[in-house]
Length: 263
Figure 1 (cartoon, rainbow, N blue to C red):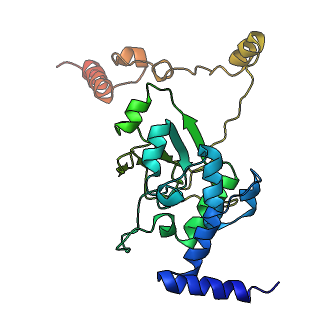
Figure 2: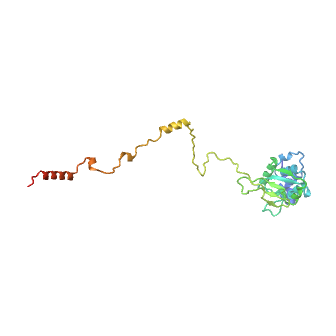
Figure 3: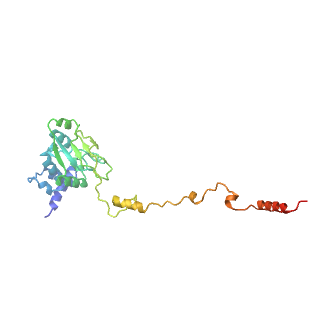
């Protein structure tokens, strides 16, 4: 199939309107109606995004018959719908990049954002929640968000989901981000090593065994030192049977004196 002629026509139209050829092709695809309700799943980029949102919200037409991307928050509030799980880090409807001087509607999305938003629609991650008629006042008064983003990943710099209101205000006061569900690396050493403690349970012996063991291993009471060494109260010569030398000498002298003749 030769696309040379199609490229030539796109270049001519783009030069007339002073736009890119890709933008001309995207707008032509927007105007083309896809009769198959699920035919948008076979497309990519902006045609897939417009087809998926049309299935969720119904036929939506803005000024000039174009898809109302810039006014989508207001359309959602008027229809009583809340767009949930909008992909994070993707330009919201009506929002524009800070580097662009003028908004180009849905064409403000980058190619990476095209892929992520189309993938969320194809996987049915992006859903619509309808609210009651009375609750529509909260949407139109910008008290209730019309677009709620998906939860940030565990290692994201943001802790809460994005929310967008009908007046175009955006905040990050939604639900908290997801927990860290990444699997732990097998065999990884912890930065704080812990000492392994082991407890061994020893069964308690029966009472009869415990009594016998106490009798066999009871300590033997030895004799006291006071019993081995008798107390010494007094020493008497007559009791001990030890002669006193001084007493013996005195007796001998008295005997000799009594044997000498008296003149």
